[in-house]
Image 1 (tube, helix red, strand yellow):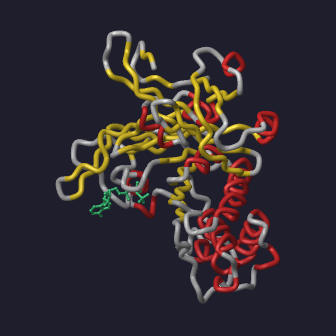
Image 2 (image 1 turned 180 degrees about the horizontal axis):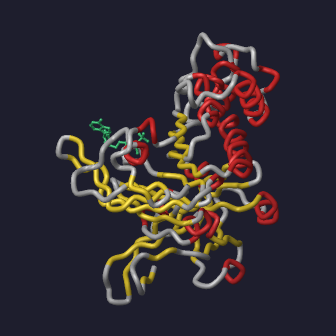
Length: 340
Ligand SMILES: Nc1ncnc2c1ncn2[C@@H]1O[C@H](COP(=O)(O)OP(=O)(O)OP(=O)(O)O)[C@@H](O)[C@H]1O
């Protein structure tokens, strides 16, 4: 199912939390709403779900081109998963997943045999078939979230809305679950909106990312485009580490250039570093496995973060206090004709 929202605004107590948002999601797409805390991600999700009403004068929320602005939440056929899994404690995994089917009005309710079959296939889908008799307290956080997802899917929602579903889990489990979610989505293709403030998660999981800032969408594009062609300094800064260089434009206006640490070339010899190489001194070396972080200080005391691969670092054979040359490979300039 496609989802389209047009010109949506939402205020609380006179404060505008969402500002004229337009968003179109294709059928079967997985879209991440990415942004810092307070940028309006959850509010946007709640408006799409129909839990919140948009401000008067806002445009419609369309599901498959049909305006659902006035359709009851219960009739929109939405599956929800939140950060804090709301499984029923007194029901085992099987019954938690079957709940939505058993709760249907009698004339829509499948037979007991159908409920069992459907629940079993969902247990297989989330790869927890062997834990069907366990209670939520006997599961890990990651397993509980998988059950929550299966429960949301049981009623065959037209849309799946996930609000920081892995937010409460530790980094390793998060990484596993995000891959798992991507594979699951490739199997079931239900239109999905996924709220997260974690850049890596958004970039790795989604087909497109909507980057939100202060109630607006700053950029809406596939992960590679968002990362490689950030539409604004905000998007650039939000998506990863960066160096900020101040300078002036050719017309002598002040400006800034943003450069990722891995987009700085470093060498012992100025010609090897690249065009317009500048000198610096190594002030710190941080070993991080495959990537080594090198901190430099320039003559004017500017601090520069550089990242190189472990093999490159080995070849450079650097230590603190060494003099090196560095050059910017891929600077993003948001002011035209900018000269560092
Ligand atoms: N019911 C409400 N009443 C008043 N203000 C609210 C309400 N819900 C949200 N807000 C405010 O709206 C702003 C956006 O909140 P929202 O939860 O949408 O942000 P978010 O991007 O999802 O942030 P987080 O990542 O922290 O969940 C916040 O400043 C919040 O305090």
